[in-house]
Image (tube, rainbow, N blue to C red; front, side):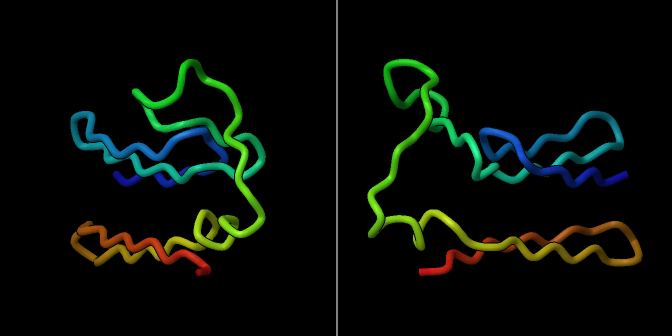
Length: 75
């Protein structure tokens, strides 16, 4: 089983048994990556950096369950 979800604060991929989980970073309240920053506080970006931080994710799922994920920034 493959689970795709979004609107979370960090990108994560994990496998639990036969379930694969793929998440996408939310844009409404982004937090720094694990281990970065003093504490979990919203990330503020300069206007010139927004197109690099935003983009889209393409997910292809083959009939046998193989998953291909690619992220494409707008910049």
